[in-house]
Image (cartoon, rainbow, N blue to C red; front, side, top):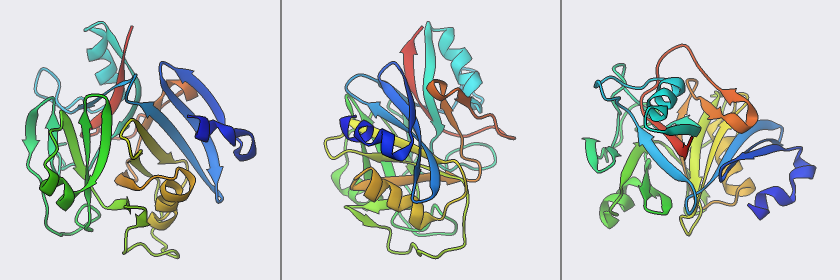
Length: 246
């Protein structure tokens, strides 16, 4: 938190706080971003896909409505991994101990198959981004997890296939985690960026050793502190968000 706020004036941030998560807007190397910093020692971060009726939540508003029926509400939220047309996850997906999709470790078409890809693992009081093969080898006992790809940063290095001058530019979103697992940083670009620039933001601006790409083009964020709740044109698959008391 102190590291992020110390240079707020220099980078032109706007920030507000609701609960423990803090969301801000900033400009870095001529690209605009929104970033939400989640403190896993204080925030309750969860993954959500299917509602009680078996249908995907699809929208932040639908998830928020369901939580309010339980005396809770949704704080920060973001789409959390690639999905098929029926909103089923492409890669590994675990929600509150229930596995929906197995781990996919092989290379394949599209961004997901641009290996190395990775897994975001949620455990009590921490969150960690693992490269997929390392995740399989270490087999951490996650409460919830979602797989996506490609990795943006791997042990402090950018994905080896990223090109600095790539013309593939989209609105993109992703997540990085601190070494101790106590803090997760969720980022969405507020304009089109390529993979290289997006990875550099996590590595050089946020100083994170591991970060994972969630998706592009359909990327959305809910950040009440910023007066933001992206709707989009179609329902989402997996959603990650902070749950707070009403």
